[in-house]
Picture (tube, rainbow, N blue to C red):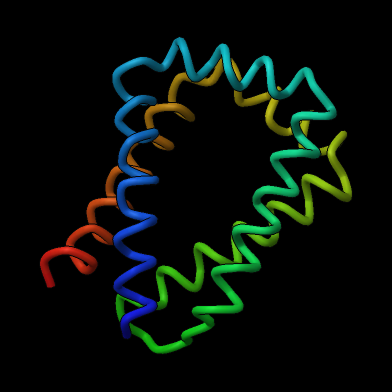
Length: 128
């Protein structure tokens, strides 16, 4: 349980801050996405970071109990899968992401989802 609380406290703010940034300054995040999508090296490096972070979460917190802790496990597995995809098929990932750059709804939905996930994790990490 201590690992769950630690990871909730860690991941909560890490999700909230970019989520709020996306909601309040979508133009900057659109510019960043455009720059990342244009760089095979950045896609690959971000893939390695996702791979390492996802694997670290899974190795320390592979909890498959249906409660709030499952959210942390799912985030870890999704990060691992995203990292694998970015390192093995970066061209496909770049093409997929390039289609999202001009989609304003994508940024709105992404920001809202990040903030909600972050708030849920902060609640269970700091309050519950």
